[in-house]
View 1 (cartoon, rainbow, N blue to C red):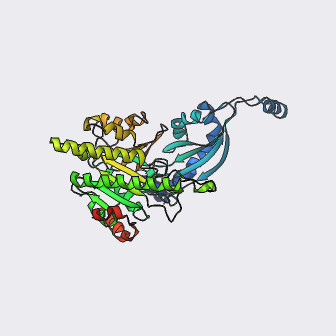
View 2 (cartoon, one colour; view 1 turned 60 degrees about the vertical axis):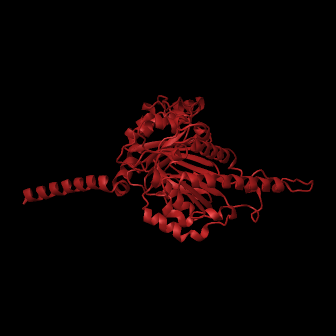
Amino acid sequence: MTDLVTWAELGGSLSALGGAAYARRAHPAAYWSTVGLPASVLRLLASYSSTMDACGLTVQPSRWRALAMRTTTRREVRPVPPRRGLIRPTTTGLRVRLRLAPGQEPADIAASTERLRHAWGVHAVHVREVKPGVVELRLVGFDVLRTVRMPKRAGGGFLRVPVALREDATAFVRDYLAVPHELVLGSTLSGKSMFLRNLIACLAEQPVVLVGIDCKRGVELAPFAARFSALATDPDQAAELLPVLVKEMEDRYDLIRYRQGIAPDTPDEEITSDVWGLPEDERPAPIVLFIDEVAELFLIATRKEEERRDEMVTHLIRLAQLGRAAGIYLEVCGQRFGAELGKGATMLRAQLTGRVCHRVNDEASAKMALGDIAPEAVMASCTIAPEMPGLAVVGDTSGGWSRIRTPYLSLADAAAVCRDQARMAPDVSALSHLRP
């Protein structure tokens, strides 16, 4: 009987271990909530001071604190770690705020994130400065990019689209008001089209004019034609569409200049330098131009095509330089975008502030996307595995970068959203003859 009980206990333990291992691999969020979270909290509480000391993140206490400690406890005065706030658990990890000691800076904490990750048994540790002297540690319990689940509070809004998930479990928001133009690079089957699909599906629900140029005969953007106000599917149609957009931009500038006919009694709030300062009843709807496979606009075979190419590139550069104030934004996609495309390519790329780089075929392509704004992100984009489509590296002009991954959205679902939201397309008379 005793042997039977022993074998039953052993079998139960093995089953529990096997179930935990399976849950950790197949259902990481459930495993984190039931097992990983309590264990990480206990490790953090038990080893916080010693871990900070081992990472070199402690400082000598102040003179008054050292004197009080010697007087009351008669113990040896030891270095103190940053003051820790409350531990706040989340569905993907933990968050805790630290008040830095005098002489410390957020870079000191950021340099030790790998050590903290191993010490507390989590998948990753990210550091964010909250205010001077206070940083927030975001501990991620598992690889959130393996199976993407967007947070419920993604922080979207008008022209602010939560399009992907960052590696720290926060949403990557494509904010056109802050970053008006963006370049999206990626090789075949890298997830570039999925990124574009999510972006269009979210913008389709807003009163925004969507315009597309897809020189692959429309295979990428044609399924969303019901929501587009204009769609060009070959270079000839693109050459017809771009001058119309430039003319629309010039008309909007004329409207702004008319509003700037400033009289002495004009209130300050009515003086503006872009369309967003115009009264709501006079403000034209913003326009987002999607260009899929931008290299097709640069490729030429004859002298006549070269003249057409130069004209289209000139229009694109003008839209990139002047479009923001007129409420015109660019989303340029391609597999490669460098000087070898021809005259004007580098100048156009310099105007595209946002950069998203999916898996590319060579390091040179990654440098084209990120090398001029976030050099450290180039190698990160070169290590994206083919079995992780949708994974990308996003950089900004501040030199910061992070990994993101776009959630899966089927083509049928995205097309259905565009059909259902066709009524949301604003009426732009200049584009009426180009409506698909």
